[in-house]
Length: 339
Ligand SMILES: [Zn+2]
Ligand SMILES: [Zn+2]
Image (tube, rainbow, N blue to C red):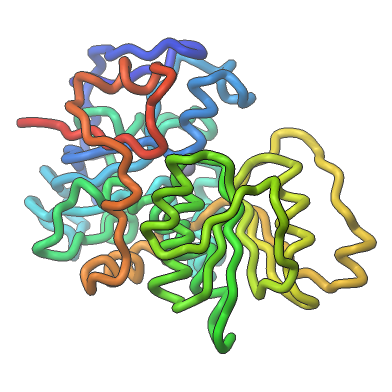
């Protein structure tokens, strides 16, 4: 089968590799229908992450696909199911998985698709993907919804829901600020804040394309370098930029929440005295995806969420290397695998 290989910064190619097979009885094999980039992948390709020095490896950890084979111990997943694939490898039954912390699975740790962190699992730009604990890690897609715009459900799209909706539970008339900067996550957060949480939502950025999408999703949109409010219940830092992280930390009301999905590879200065005086609940960490995939899919099926507005372009599979190494890859390019 063909596998998309990240060779080095700015260099992607398709390689012929052995297709994965069923190893454990709980495995399933999934052929992608559509796959897309996590915002992190763009940083890997640009060479600005520590992982950018680890090539060659199979890139990609977001896809939806068709189940083409199941192991004998799969109870709910069947051949022919159209599913979303969680980006991480999680057993579903250890103490952390039971708490919903599937990105901290005690059996598999850092293991995931598309980065060589703990074992080899291939990438979701491969033509066939082995999914362990398939009953747990695969989420059936709702019938009647075009799966293409759900390509991100296994990571960034579910992370938008995860970063906003649980935090706002029980808050009347919530007000949310989203600090953009990375490609798609901030926009998925806006969608969840406006339409799932019913929040007044403000989006800060300086990228005109993302700002236009955020406005379409129902946010009030302001230049990140302009005046900012400081009384939000929740600020989401989706920037991966220390200057914007600081702005997010300073924008919430006393005892407010800041959820950061940005990845910082170096230490950053944090205004600790201000946080102390204000009282701030700060969370930074990987998205757990799987527990949030089902409610996110239900919200899409109900017409509440609008992931199609975040998609920046739809391309053929063969175009993956050229599009992803071009200067204008777009904030959420989705690639469709033909028959
Ligand atoms: Zn990711
Ligand atoms: Zn586990």
